[in-house]
Structure formats: structure tokens, C-alpha cells
Amino acid sequence: MMLKWYKVGMSGKKHVIPAKGYTFQTLNGLNQKIWKKYKNKKLEKAVKMLQKSHNEVMALIERHNDDELFTKNKYDWTGTETLGTYLIYVTSDHYEWGILTIQNFQICLFGADERVQKNIKKRFSEIIKQMKKEGKL
Image (cartoon, rainbow, N blue to C red; front, side, top):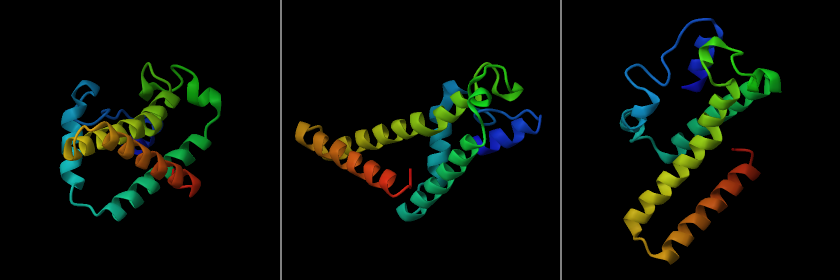
């Protein structure tokens, strides 16, 4: 979604952010819509889609200097936020939210036992480290 916001915004046009019919206060509904759209994707395909999107956003970040990323009111389409703020929201902040959501889901499935929770968190940390090492994140 960020890439679309960026493309439309940088062309001087106005785009509905986060999406038509949604606000940042109604993201749960948007997340449900996105989940329904992609819920049957195979894990391998979903990971490839994440990697592709991540790489495209990272390339977008690299095209901008700090002034372009972190000066308020630099771009009309970002409103009162900076471009960098949007990019943080859709990368590290969103990844952290996703990881915590998955961890909480796993805890619901496998119980809230402290040992299980530690193992889940440890395994996620290992996965993230491995993906970073392989350049996938």
C-alpha cells in the first residue's frame, strides 16, 4: 500500500490513506479485509511477497536523503507527517506488530504457559535473525 501511496502522492494527486472507506482508527477492519484476501496464500508465496515488498520499500528509502525523509511539510500528500514517519510505520513498526500478533495467536493456540511463550519468542527471534542474515529483511 505504501508504494501506491507514494506513487500517487509524488505525482501530485491525492490518495486516500490508508484506504478508501478506512481511517487509521479503523485499521482493524482494513486488516480483516486484507487477511481475507490473502488467507489462502501458501507460506512460501507470502514470504516471497513480503520480501519483494520490503525490498521495494527499502529501495525507495535509499532514493531519499535525510532532509527528504524527515522534514515536515516537505510533501503535501504526507500531511503533518514526514515521509520517513510513513516509511517507519510500514516497515519496522508494522513488522513488530505482525510478529506480536503471530506470537499472541500462537500463545492462544498452545497455551499461555511461560515456557511455551519463551520458546515461541525465542523461535521468532531466530527466524528474524536468519532472515536478516540472508538479506531477506
